Image 1 (cartoon, rainbow, N blue to C red):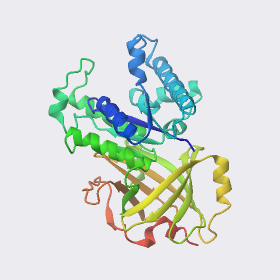
Image 2: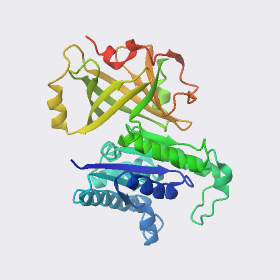
Image 3: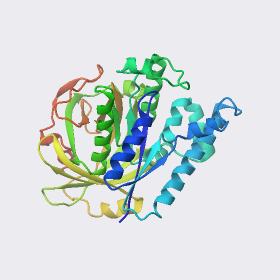
Image 4: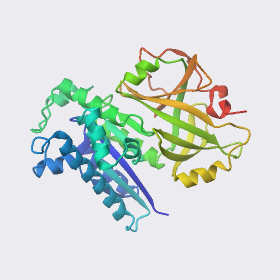
Length: 362
């Protein structure tokens, strides 16, 4: 069966995106993938004379850019289905949600309305998002020496734009942030590894740490531009005791995406995990195989990007004094930097009582 995967490479100015494209092409062709690249739409339009300053308004320009982006992605996917290769990786040099970083919320809503689109559907149409942090944040000397005539942002402006881009994608179920904590070549290797792990090519396990926290300040979370709330309904299916199978409905404002997940524990932090996107009808069909000994978990998840880390805070209707915070890591020894507004009670990674499967027990 043909496997077509669509990912986004995004990030702030001078983050290494252009180099990343070459790196990805070489690395994944060697792994047997046909690698297709959807070029950056803004560059195509502006080079051709269509720009915010040549159109009637920024909103009118953004409508053109979003519509062209969606059209290109649809055509690349259509073309991929005609190809003989079994594994096809479509790599988008920025995606639809990047445009949100260059508009006010009101303007973005106007674009959605004009194009009859929904932000949730646009965001979650990508299988994974990889955000390369601007060199202005953590590798300033390389940003300041960058020789790019088109780059006009100061270091601070580049950091602020980087944050807006991260905010636009926050809420996606598979967002990975690649920071500048290592040298540039190692940054590219980390990106390759993250993509390979997502595709199941390299060590397809997740290292997840889980913390019991005091009930968070929801007003602070909801006012934070780097935080996004999604609704999740999680139902466990009948399965072998050694494996956990669940289906999820994930989204907001009546717009949902559906998934089936299989998980097998290796140790306290490390788990094998595979996930498949479902249609609404497939999701409803699988619900008929729900475990009768577990209730469906309803929760609100606050996805928070903070200091180049991606946290997920789950708030449950049956708790008013505590919540669960999770973070996925590539290395068990990675330092976690908690926001000041989050108050950790204790780590519960190895405590089975705080797993969703346990909380769902009737």
